[in-house]
Image 1 (spheres, rainbow, N blue to C red):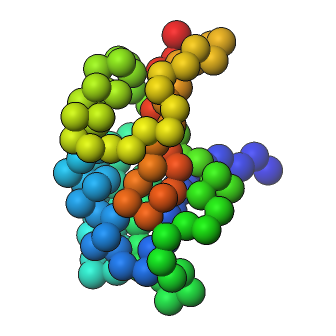
Image 2: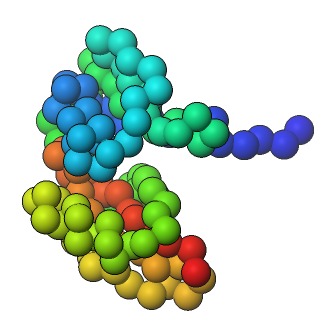
Length: 118
């Protein structure tokens, strides 16, 4: 049996601490929303889910353990747009062979990457 990615989840003590960043700053569309769980992304893409979880407290203590990659077709423009909105980048766009990537943090210090395929 083959497996494929269905969704990725980022859990928080307070969903409302993360949702404005992903929805308003990154510009990800909301696909489904309830008081403690939201799915973001385009209709043909696996969703990125955000949710409140009783076992999650405060910021990420090991933010590099899981890194969510978000594809863009113009990484330099997206980097400039997000930088202007105050997004904290930990790595500027870097040529990684078949991809260009840039790493940044969300409000709870989870690491995300912009990726542009060449």
